[in-house]
Structures are given as C-alpha cells and as structure tokens.
Length: 250
Image (tube, rainbow, N blue to C red; front, top):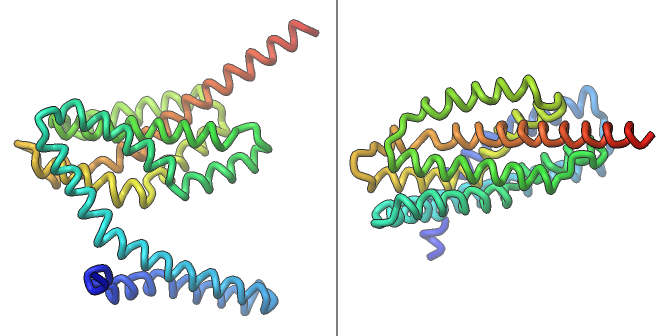
C-alpha cells in the first residue's frame, strides 16, 4: 500500500523543488539587498517554505493517485448511465457548488475583499455567488458534452455579455469579477471536476475526450465573472433604493 501511495513521488518532489527554489532565491536576494528582516522573521519564512514544499508535494501526489483516477471513474460511470442527460447536469451543479465552496483560494480572496471594503461586500455573499456561478458552469459543461455543443457558442456570447455588464455594474465589482474567474479555477475544480468531464467524454458516443472533455475550465472562468457582475448590479440597485428612501425621509 505504501509503495502504491508513493509511487513516482521522487518525480513530484523534483517538480515542486523546481517551482519553489526560484522563490527562495528571489526572497534571499531581496533579504540581502532590501528587506533586512531580523532572524526571527526569516526563521518563520523558512519554516513556511518548508511546510509549503511538503504540503504541495503531498497534494500533487494525492492528485496523481487519487483525484484524477477517482474523477475519471465517476465520469465514466455517470456517462454510461441511461439517465445521464438528467444526472450529469444535476450532479455537475452539486459538484461545482461543493468544490467551489471548499476552494481555499476563493476563501482567501473573499476575506481580502471583505477586509478592504470594510465589510460592505460580505465574504459569505461573495462565496455563495461564486459557488452558484461555478455550479452553473459545471452543469452547462456536462450538458455541452452530452449534446455535442461547440465550446465557442457558449464562450463568445458569455464574454460579450460580460463586456455589456461591465458598462452597468459597479466599478469595484468589475475588478473583483475578473479576479474571481481566475481564482475559481483552483486545484479542487481542475483536479477533480475536469477529470469527471474527461471521463464522461470517454464513454459518450460520438464525443472526443480531447475536444469535448476539455474546455470546461474556460466556462468555470467565465461564469464567476458574470455572477459577480450581476451581484454588482444588485448592490447598485440596493444602494440606490437606500439613497432614495433616505432622501424621501429627509
């Protein structure tokens, strides 16, 4: 069991080391010339880098031996079911919502947004908005695979709609929206949900896993942008109603 769990782990360690070592060099160059941090803080940074190295290595190994095979097996099982056209969009919505709700990067961004806006944009509201947006994109991706809908017929109108919403949404929500698109395509979605999509395309007649299985991440990046821009419109409407109400009372 141990040999299976840590199969090719040396390769993963090498990949993570190649990613982390340039950051370490960059930090110590800045430390030597500019930062001049005391040893106590440097010690914390070194411990943090070490924990990051270990955590990232174990995560990537887990993805390799667990997330990818499990996701693909789930996708193939669901895709072969007679009721796939009902099950896949529904379960895709659930998977997308749960994966986004558990995404660490999204929680960090929501915390920063709530802190910077002094609580005027609540992190819980933003988290729920992003989770619903990604859930819709996963459900739409599953439906696209089943029906053989070309990816561009969804992506192009989606970004045109996003550009239109930019014109009317609050300015502070525009920047948050486009950052949300990148943050939502985090490790939970990429490592698990994408494997499910490829598995579904593998067993769906007339579908090519390379053409139909991939492309889901582009939809995941799009729908959070739209959902946050819509949230900006709702905030704008609420603030306008509050302003008009206070004006009438005065």
